[in-house]
Structures are given as C-alpha cells and as structure tokens.
Image (tube, rainbow, N blue to C red; front, side, top):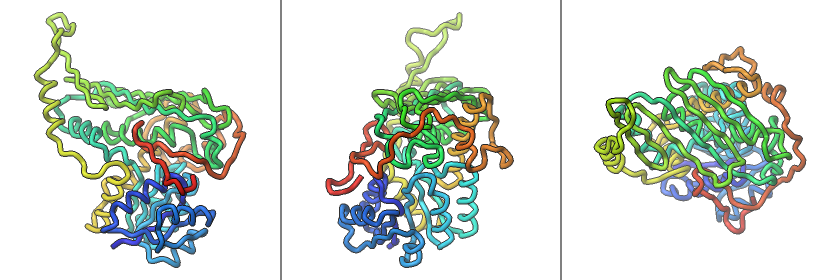
Length: 395
C-alpha cells in the first residue's frame, strides 16, 4: 500500500484525489498540503479523508509523513521548488502540467530525479484516451505512409473572470497563457504522435482578455523533415472544439475518429469513390484495438502506481514533460522575436533560462483583479471532460 500526499489543493487536485480513491486497493491518501491550511482542511473534509492530515508547509509534511508518492497540483511557478524538495526527500513525484515555466526549471527537476533515483512523471492525461490510442496505433503501424500535414486545434473558451484567479494572467506566476496552460495537452500529443519538429514559427496576441498580460490566442507552424503541422492555441474559441487531423500519403485520419482516402484518375484528379477498401481496412483495425480500462488522470495515475510497484519507468516521464515545454518555449520565442526558432533549444539560449519570458514577452494588458479562489468546475481534457468539485469543496 502506497502512502500518497497532495501538494496544492486547488480545483485540479480533485481529479487526483478521485483517481487515488478509485485505486484505494493500492494507495491511501495520508496528507494534504496547501499554503492556506484552511484550504487543505476543506479539501480533506470534502473528500471525507478522515485519517489524512493537513499541512501549510511542504517541508513539514515531507518530514512528518512516510510518503511514497506525491501529486504536485500547485501553480506552475512552484513546481520546480516543490518537486525538487520531494525528490530529495526520497519521494516519487507526479506533477501537473505544465512541468514548469522554463527549461532551466525542468532540468533542475530532472537532475533531482536522477540524483535521487526516484520516479518523476508529468501529467499528460490525454494520451490515456481511447481515441488517442487509436490514432497512435494507426500512425505507428506505418500503413498511412509519410505524414504530409497535421492540423492541431487546441481551441477553448474562458470568460474574463478566468484570469482573476491570483496566479493566472501574468508571465511571472502562470508562466504563459493558453499555449502553456491549455495547448500543452495537444502539444504533448503532437510530439507523441508525430515526433519533434525541426523548427517553429509563430504569432500570438491577446484578443479578448484585457485583464491578463499573457496571450489568449497563438498560431504556430511546425516544420518536420518533409511535412508541416499547424497548431492553434486558444481560449477565445466558442464551442471548445479540440481536433487533430493528420494528412498522410495514403489517407487522412482524425480525432474524433474519421478516415478519408483518395485515389487518383489518370490525370491526377481524385476519383469520386476514393479508396474505400483501405478506409474499411483502417476502420476495422481501429475497431479491433482494445479499449482502456481507465482513462484520463485515472489511467495515468494508475500507470504511475504500477510503475512504482513493478520497478519500471512510467509511460510518461519527466523527459516527456520537458519536451512539451521545449516546444512551448520555441513557440513563445518565435512569436516574441518574430523569427523561426530551431530545435532543440540549447542551454546558452536566453529562452532556456527562467525569467526570460517575463522580461521579454509583451504585456498585452495588465492584470486587473486577483482573487484567492473561484467557484465552479474545471475542464481538464476534451470538451466533455468537466470536473466539478464536491458540493462542500472550496474552489
């Protein structure tokens, strides 16, 4: 039985708590920590964690409890410090996305993980969705041929009050806008499905949120050896339609699952019927794939639990979290400097270091409100994945 602690008791911690409670045959939640002890107590009471203890100091919790694993669900600016402390205390760590605001922070966390020999995983729960597993399996099969183009739409909508929460809306505390904190899901998926691009060009703006310094809309072009991908990161899109469309040599596949395959007439124009046999073959292959027993956060946290139990690496590592942050950093650098950014980003590049974004990024507007907490549920994955806290929980 693994002893688990939660560091940070805002809304996203609810998702971790539910996943751990669902795996109560393998883990028990023994401690919760938050800068405000009352918030930790409220969360403990909301989830009826009668045997867990609350702390206002992470060091105190790490020293007092016999912990095997912690979930870090603090604002991104605190991830590095808290993760390094936990790893150095000999505790395995799973940290919410994004891994950290800078590559320098990511590498400090990875160094601590290597020194300690402990496990470090970064949340990328959308890999644990059946429709994403289907895309991955079809692409990995090689049946489609080389990829020509991908369109990745990370399109969300958030009202003005979204950025009133104290840590959101500034480069210093949030680390970025929708590219870092929303499109990180699809950026991880793009890297998982397509691999790392060679270069990035991008533009960004703040189109609708005059109470935030950070961007609420960005469009990036990713260059691969032969193909291209376009990524839209947004919190201004009504309808919140997230989509991945991959155009390859033999067919187009997309999420939600759909297949189209053209064939050519002698003059090169498409035939009217297309390659119906290949479409049927891909549909049958997709249908034959096993479905996941646990999806989203529950799927990833169960993988981490199994990795600890079996002494193996988790399916999603700290290195995966760093790769996603590197692509985010390249998008920001390209948009700010108005030039193409080559990957990988070396340690001597200014954008590798913590503080560069805060110093160089435009403040589209100044943050005009700062509240300690907010009521309401949160959207954590696809547009249908809404998480509402228990009625008695604080936001």
